Image 1 (cartoon, rainbow, N blue to C red):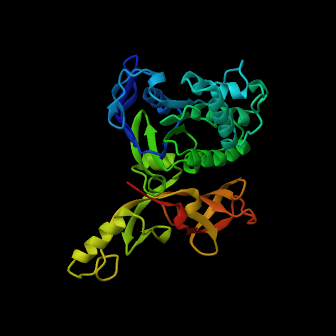
Image 2 (cartoon, rainbow, N blue to C red):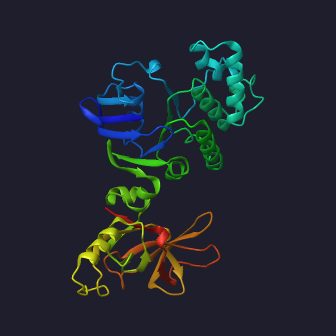
Image 3 (tube, rainbow, N blue to C red):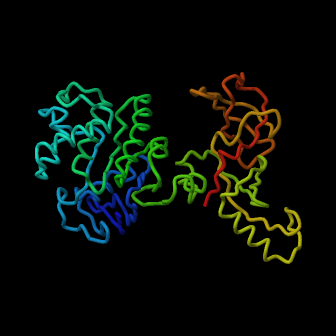
Length: 363
């Protein structure tokens, strides 16, 4: 297990990382997610031993302070792969095992095993200068895994690739990491990448870890509005939890996963049976802040009325900005989605229905 305890990294008296604490269990993939400049790569480099830092980095309880990079047993993959240009594919992958003193026959078997793992069987003698971007990143991953590291550190490993290749390689990488069963820390600013690859998320902002937890839990219940907006929430408004449902100005939806539901149920069980002002007899409402992602509001036959003021087409839907100030004055305009087949244009009157899949409970 990796434990990061109150790590701080300072440049010219300005903290780039502030009191960051994390834990990664054996075999788990943790995504360190945050906007550009949030300190993600700096924290990864501090964990690797590449940046001086205060605080502690421990592996299975052993403090790694003072342990040099090459003795930490960590594998690193950077955005550009950093392959050795004078070595072929096999030479790159075999580098770590050779430094460990692995016999040549064992190195050869290890190279073949890893090329099969990353889908590049037969590439042993290929010059790395002739590889595509995706192939080069696969070789970089194989090279990092070759010495059997106890922790794999991935620093924006897919960000230099085009969108289609990035999506394809992310799906392949999921399989590689699961089969290798290697404890992994992934640094990324790409939410799709984080959600595809990770078991857990840690959201870093301005050098501080603002929230960490299971991927779905963080997505559904961001810790505060800043985290919520980074995770795609575009509208924030007051709401209430009553009888396992969240209610807001745009309607109601089931949220059995929300912690406030448990609090509401507990309150109901301990009440005297008097009816609340908004719920049924025996129910207790819990005030919450509701976050809506664009797909939480869908153009439908029934719902809250509004006027389309802007439209943008996406690959599989149409994104619209809708003026709802006449009915929901506290938010004025909202982001919503329509199907590609719906001919929605600016100036059109539409109705918006609430979709629970896009609802978050903030804080």
